[in-house]
Image (cartoon, rainbow, N blue to C red; front, side):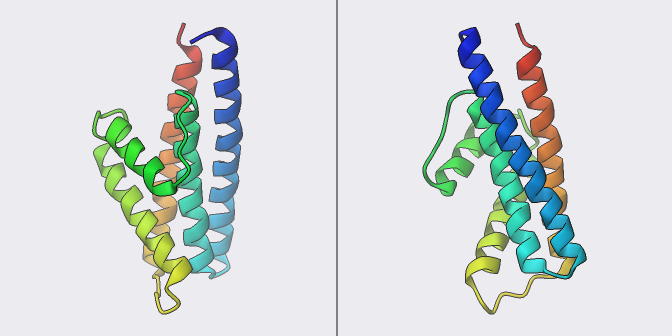
Length: 138
């Protein structure tokens, strides 16, 4: 990768990580206020933006969330770059977010919301380290 491409990809990854951090913060605030549906939504989007930050480093992007998550699972989870347990948690977060947003009768527990926020926090930290390692490579 040429230096200017690497610089642009790192800038985009950084921007997306900023969004992921903000989403995670808002998820925590929503949970503290008892807004569990909103907290699940923001936790999922923190996960999604952390993933898109990682993908920015290779210049990969998809129009649909489904395709983004499938590619991340295939390329990063199955190959052991990120823990396999995280792959299952991301799938659950997607399902919970979708149900929370679109199923008016879906009731999510505080415990489930805490799990979604924990998944978002774990992925955010791992993505930050992955991006830092990418930045430090020659």
